[in-house]
Length: 578
Image (cartoon, rainbow, N blue to C red; front, side, top):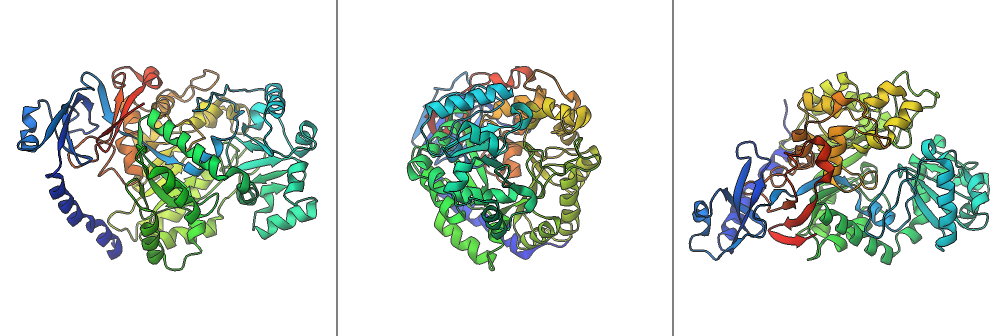
């Protein structure tokens, strides 16, 4: 195998810095925390005391005296507030969109599933009549102009198009955001405000935006996949109003703190307003003393395609945005096929029962070009892929590239992986790929897709995570908020039980073991974003991030995982009450 010198140097460059940092820590006070620590480290799975200084874990032991090498002749405090409590590593949600969260947490949800949110809860509704009743009530109670709501799904809520929205709101602009986030439906009043008053103007605007003609419809008021960016641009003055972004980011930090999430990655920085604008907004929200989490920014390939010198761009961008909480690793997000919640994923034969085709977000030829460019430039790849046809294209594109040139620290992570076959999972393992999986597909969509689109067998085997475990694939579980709640123990519960909204158990052979599910929200979740050397477990030299729990989830069984509550979060050695 040939190795890339740039990647090798990038990998080794951190070693002298770590040595310098270690010397600095010997001058700082030490805090020794007592608790029932679950380390997620196989060689030392449990400990009672952990010594911390300067945000770093110095050592672990079963007695305070055993930590004397770190505490002798140094200012030391014994912190016993977590004595008797189960303490996990800080939890990792490896795929959140902070800008999407800031937008969505400001608009009302009408979704098939229940939501517990900082500013109020939203009960799920799964009938057409129920959806329209809720939408009418919202139109009567919420004076926002335009009114935007999120969570609509045709398989639960029935057909919806521009004409139907016109009946509900003939004169008031209305936007219905589909449950996938990847499409919106708008009424005629909204199109008029956007200057898209007739079909010719509508089609011309989408053609100028280089949207795929299959992704938009004037008759339906539909902007989907590659057409969505035009709608987002039109919505930007409303959804990105400074006060709304500030409030939404605060809510996001609240959700992360409440559920013990100390590390995440933004898997598409720039989708709303471009990389520089969004990186600045995220930095404003996270680089504060109230923040108990770090975030990696992962730009989109289609934005970096405009950049001629990737090395210069990355160095300059790091200088602008990095701080104590925000980082910009050499990683990039690519997109293959469409959204799972919208049945836009590309499926191999027999395809969909109704004969429709999924959608490509990036055509295979363009994806091939992007994979080669960014891999050869030393970037790790995160590839959004959902259907088995999409996965075939991704694997066929990756194999000749990554087996011919790989730097010391480059990785490839498949994002979401809604439907894969057993043969594909074997191939994923053989190629050494990681998966960042979205378990909420089986929970929300299992029954609906069994009846509409995929049939009972393929619907029951979506999220084939048990197979990944059997093949030894590194797996993280993510929320992709708001595709699922920011609640890692809920994600672990879904993956370990596979129970649908209607209470059915689907594909029990694809359940994760409890141990794998817990690794998928800690050490393996850290691995899929390339941070397992510093977060995801409790070990000397790692960041002092802990989640203090009300129970030991290892001992409660799979059925009780989602009952696990976080009572406090420790970030870089600093305690934050939940």
